[in-house]
Length: 223
Image 1 (cartoon, rainbow, N blue to C red):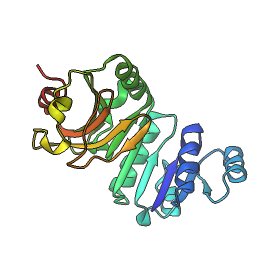
Image 2: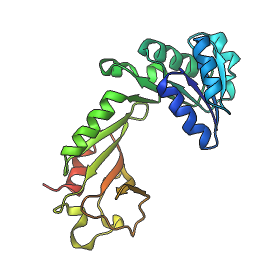
Image 3: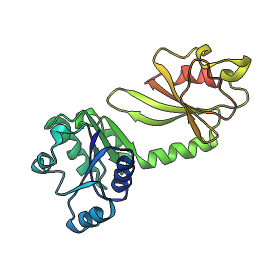
Image 4: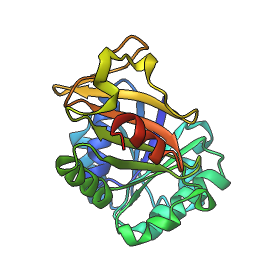
């Protein structure tokens, strides 16, 4: 997969290194020449282009028409919105992921601006804090703005209906617009099957459309 990351800060560089190590073709767009040179030295195997990603000419030079994913990862929300919009509208990039620096601006990061998925570090940290103290509660991890769906997580306590009576995942009466996508158990990620049995302390990650949280609560938490 070919990925372009706009912004060579700590977030962009960490993503570039991970994606490179996972076998993807990665290009970083960084407008500061000195910073771009440091990235070239530090990240062997990652293409670095010194340019302003908010300019159409820069995105043309980066060859965005052949890119599967663009990540707008600068430290400026206005720049990330411009990059997202140009990538989607001018170059029809299939998937745009954008960083939200100020949670107050999160409402703008939607399909109007070309954003498929927005990631707000403060909101994710808040979700992790809530998750740490909210066993037996549904916590929203990420909103997938373009589809109206969300990733939610629930940590199962000893009284969770989902683990009573030796039930399996296939036995659970999930709403039609919800699907278990992962179970985190003992710091390991499990991909559930119909015969998977959930246990106390499991972190269950569910992909659900808007409004399904109440039904999810009934399945995993009860009344």
